[in-house]
Amino acid sequence: MAIRPLPTFLSDQELYDALKRRDDRAYQYLYAESFPSFRHWMLTHNGSEMDAEDAFQKGMLSFLLNVETGKYQFQASTQVTTVLFEYCKRVWLTELKSARVRTKAAMPDSVDSMDTGNVVEDLERLEVVNTVQKSLSQLKDECRKLIEWFYIEELSLREIAERLGMKETSVKSKRYDCAEKLKGFYAQNAKKMGL
Image (cartoon, rainbow, N blue to C red; front, side):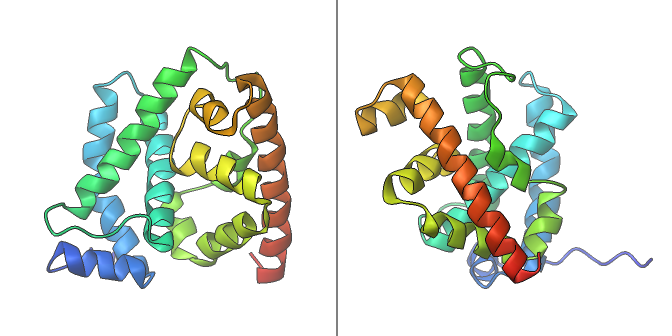
């Protein structure tokens, strides 16, 4: 099996434009350029190799969704790889902060089951991003906001509870219900798309 050379981009604007076009070479480039330094950072901040992979996948997915939806706009003064690194770092810091509040066994994060395998491989099949977006749009407004706030904007359950005027325990339960609905829509849409 021949090793494909790593794609290069002449500028961050070119890389951003390639991400907007859903060019799978841009995803390969981001992974190759960003993951080694992020893994090193994780290992020096109480994380394991597996933690690094998980946080990177979640951060990269969140970043790419924000590129897709236009929530992240390219700024000439900022490197795209630096922005991705910050997304991934925020995932880990949020995880560390919330580890004191919630236990792993308390309630499964059903949406995480969609993030199976290597995120780069998943994102090379761009239908996954489209299917997630379509599934999100099928949720009722409050559910969609809750999922986006928790998984994309990385807000804590307490912050979401304040925004919705609910108790934190109610938000936790609602997040679980909304994640299950999203999972159901995703399964239906993925089946239609042949994923």
